Image 1 (cartoon, rainbow, N blue to C red):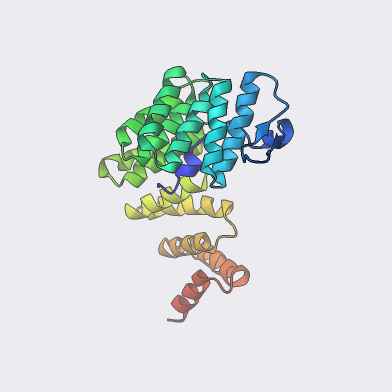
Image 2 (image 1 turned 60 degrees about the vertical axis):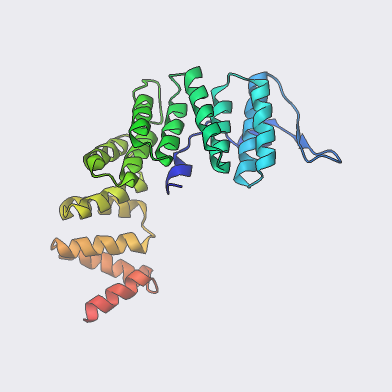
Length: 265
């Protein structure tokens, strides 16, 4: 599974619904919960989705499937029910069923950005990078779609993980687009650092690592990378500042040990 995939999946149903809107009982002879306090079919379906995804997260596939099937029973055309079921199939390894479920939800609502994003992440996981790209871009093209930053980041990370040289320029473009919508995206920043280091563009890499360090001030690996780039670029004041932080705040970290050895050689 791609490193970023679980974060790439967007579900708009909060598990907090369980506590606020649902109560459940388990009767003797059955471990299947009964959901109470339902009002409309859609609300009942959303409650079941929240339960199903919670069970899936806990590794209880049987209860996850039970609740997601119930959700579809309450609201057969609810997009969230279909892409939650698709995600379930993906997690348990039923790839063909997952693909069919994703296609179903996209056909139900071609302006559902979350569904397009989720299907794009799925396609990327299957190595279908061009198709994934098309679905991600369809999502961000929707005027009403609000998760543009996350989807651009998903697209950039997908193409980066493909390892295909033809996508290299696009990776940078899409990650920069993601940061334009949300400047606080550590994965986008760290990937841009690595991408520019690979291209020997040290100045750009240093600019991104400084931004990353502001978001990850308690990460000695990021501070050490900033120190290394500062040294290489002749920013001695910056290098000294990063070194001092490592020695004072992270004296026992592996990065501080590496720095200590480098300075004594």
